[in-house]
Amino acid sequence: MTDGDADSARVEELAATVDGLTTELLDLQERVRLLEAELEDETDTDRSVEEMFAAESSTDEKADRDVETIGDDIIVG
Image (cartoon, rainbow, N blue to C red):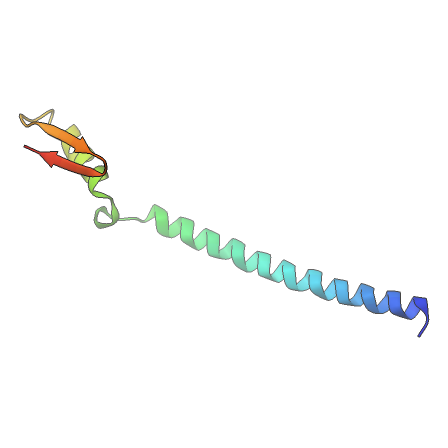
């Protein structure tokens, strides 16, 4: 086997690797698009408690209740 044959084999191997990586990249890009679409279609049930509470508070026009937050917990009293 000459250096030219070895180089040719290496080029073919690298071309196959690039093709495989390109296919994988396209698959991952499609997966990202699907996840982004899923995220945009998020329903109220998927929102966090904090998001729902904030939305409720803004529509209640500052209802008469004391609210205290400790870490991730919301205490209404």
